[in-house]
Amino acid sequence: MFWKIFVTTLILIVNMNRTVFAQTPTRLNQFDYWGAYSYNANKNTVCYILSIPTDQAPSTVKHGDNFFLITKRLGPGKTVTFEPQFMAGYNLREHSYVNVKIGAQNFSLFTKGASAWMDMTEGEANLVAAMKAGVSMTVKAISQRGTNTTYTFLLKGVTAAVNAIQKCQ
Image 1: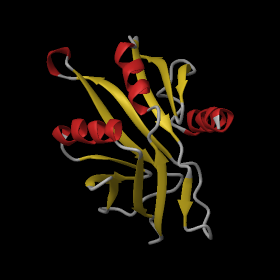
Image 2 (image 1 turned 135 degrees about the horizontal axis):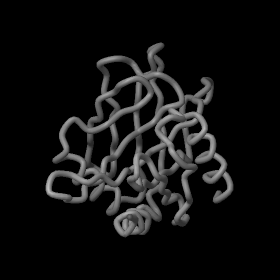
Image 3 (image 1 turned 60 degrees about the vertical axis):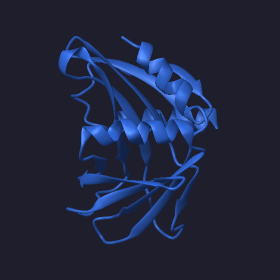
Image 4 (image 1 turned 90 degrees about the vertical axis):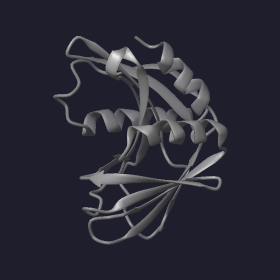
């Protein structure tokens, strides 16, 4: 599983906007299903965690590379926040929402291109807390073509990975 996550991370890095990265990301550590990474951009260190789905449906379509990330951000007054993001291997339907379900809790992420984020920063902390307390997470999205897709992410290791990027500078 480690090598699959590591190779998939490298694919993500190559496929992302190359101008964003001033340096190749460094893997800080692997925590079960979640890897912690950092890279330098514009004299700042960006720290994030990511995982790949352990299951995806429907099996009859090409999903591309899909990821769920949490990026450490510095907010007003240098307060640390964590920004969850879903990245699909395809463009998501415009003006749609990605649904994230952890236990009985549901979260909506707005879409733009192949990515989805929380509308309100207040909800980000709630989503991260639910991820830390949960066992698995289901992500449901609609492709630009109208295909309903579902991804399962296991949450084992997410707390340790978030703690690692908390210390990252």
